Image (cartoon, rainbow, N blue to C red; front, side, top):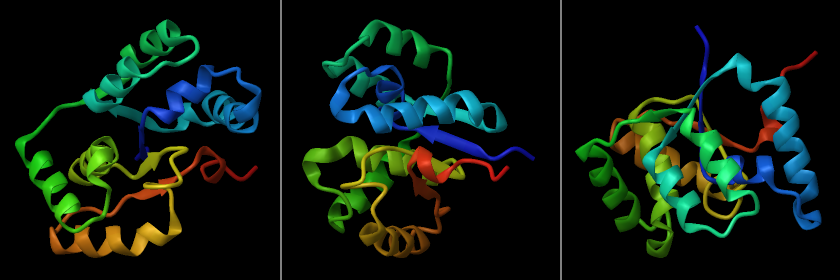
Length: 155
């Protein structure tokens, strides 16, 4: 059975980004997409699309066209309840609602990996125990939250 990967908005945006300041991340994202993405079932949520629409991204039209081809997870009322618990327990800052939504989608739908370059609020070792505790209390799946660098197949 193939494992599943959820993309937050950083992954599609970095996939097309040409800025020198994030070149390493963009190169790694493209390399992961070219070499590894076919090994996984790939998902996004409407939140990913909302964030990409709001943002001022280089090649925004290409990015939106790209994500339009990816399978979208359906909204569910329970996801808002999960987000509320995350915010009540200061897992994510209230002004970073999107991060809480991404995590809630992945946890609710039991997606193996949340792929992101957001190392402040998501792919952060200091957050992992807090996420594990809250998700266990809620009887939710605990996903791996990682960067593309951590999801290459050993060859």
